Length: 318
Image 1 (cartoon, rainbow, N blue to C red):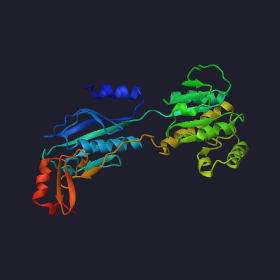
Image 2 (spheres, rainbow, N blue to C red):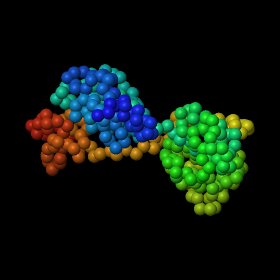
Image 3 (cartoon, rainbow, N blue to C red):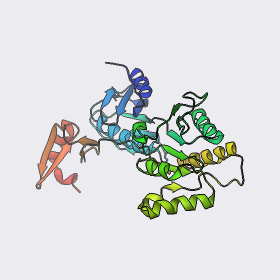
Image 4 (tube, one colour):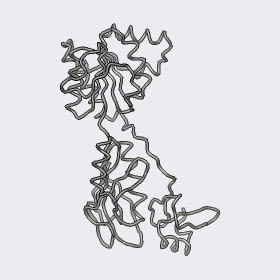
């Protein structure tokens, strides 16, 4: 089996989202070991080994949540007295009370592909914006409507077609139209047909209002028009063409930092149940230990939990 770090490197190179899970602390007799790593992908599959079967469904569930919101988190598994008073928005405690009597902390670090910026237009500002995105670690695509050179230093890709579907634009990606009034309307219609999280039009306020009204008259509904940032960029006053790129990039970074964009990752969560004895998450589909009580089915992470439940169901129900 491929090691977790090797698999993580491969997935990152393929721009496939995943979560790297690392055991950062443990107390015996937990079977997990400090430094143990696993990779969880958006389909809920785990590669690697962190510890016993009781913890795995909880780790996977929290990892999938991390892929959706893009935030790292520390998962504490075990009795609360093992973890002191450390709390926080990204510290999640699960009072695991399994037979192993161990405890551990698992750090979940989502790795989501960097955003993509598609800049449509031919101008010094358009090229500057594409270059700055690359500096940030984003992938940039410059759509050069003039059919110019196919290579530009510091720009990710240069294409000459407005075939945006071929660029695989997702919810965390950006599109900026800087066509200088040549075909703003056509470019915006193409952009609105994607799921881009940000669509900006570089234009004066008067020109932007005219373009939006044209689209409205031609059947584009108000909900779609509300997706357009027009004029694009922070209001920094009158700027030269290249410096407009700075204002536009600043607006996009602010939107991203403020949580205005999702990661765009779709995860496949399975049906889950909570073990009424130890409060661990149990994958319903693969659960091996179940019990019936008062017409309801209960799921357990281990046979010991089921045995405890069957001895006195009333103490665990409700």
